Length: 137
Image 1 (cartoon, rainbow, N blue to C red):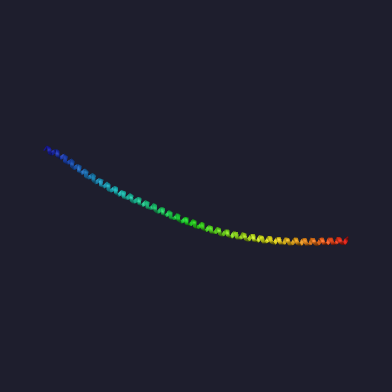
Image 2: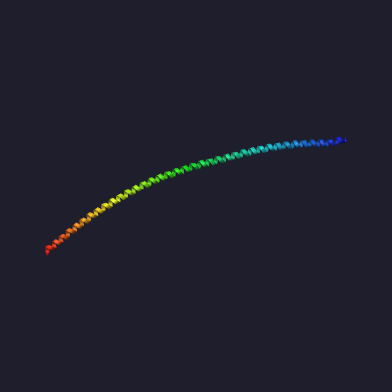
């Protein structure tokens, strides 16, 4: 009987050890399941954040591309306007220079005619004085 009495605590200890082992295994399995679940959630969260970031960057890329296209179009339009403005200004300057040259030519002609007329008058006045001097001598 002594042998049996010793055996019982050993059986009880073994039984308790088995219970602890099952309990530990179950808790470990629950921990593993929880960890796997949390990792899945983190993975989904990270994937969602990455997708949001990519969507944001893609949107910014498209927005930037559109802004560049608009800026290029604006610059092109300004270049065309500047070219046309310069062309018009050159034409106006050419016309103005032509008119000034025509006026200068006309003024020169008037001055020439006036000088010729004065020269003719002076010549005639000189002839008259010479003729008067000859008559009076």
